[in-house]
Length: 254
Image (cartoon, rainbow, N blue to C red; front, side, top):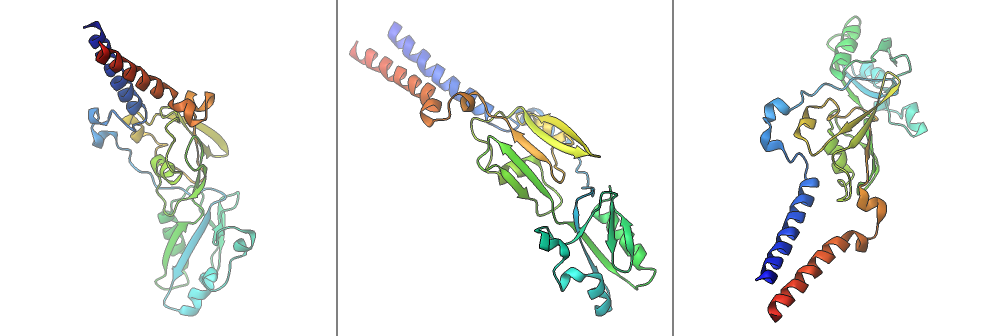
């Protein structure tokens, strides 16, 4: 009888351990307790900063004028010779220099606002111009305990921390999920924020959606720090299985 109780306790311990580990590696495991509408963060439009590269496409009725306004469409931009993306680089003061217009202040402007500004300037000399702007060098870096650490290009203007982790192959099972560091530069100052990916409230954080050049650092857990080999990581599970087998054998013999 005692042996059977011992067997049941061992099985229960193994099952409970599995549940705890699963909960630790599950994202937002409390979402069923949160109203998704209230928890969701209103996406703020990405604002242009010094060092950003803008691709501005201007279309007009006159093809010759369109060629003048879009030099990168027919020839390689000087930026490409330096290994950078083609387009207009925002200088340290927040300006870009456009043909026929000159300097345009774009710092802290959204691409939609830049479209309006450039269109208003062109309307002074050109009839019915169409302007389209996008940021071409939107990148984020993912470092630490992930499958593929590195720098990743974001094709659009929207990327969440989950998108970045997905591009990096997701976090390893040894990673700490309740203390993800996001490093962001605002007005020349570095800001460091910790996000808990086990908590659904993170969806409402202003750091859930990323800015250009954000850095995400995933801290390694104790398993990673004190033993990187697969054998060491699987040792606790192996001991539990051996204990279970031993108990079953004892009960069978009795």
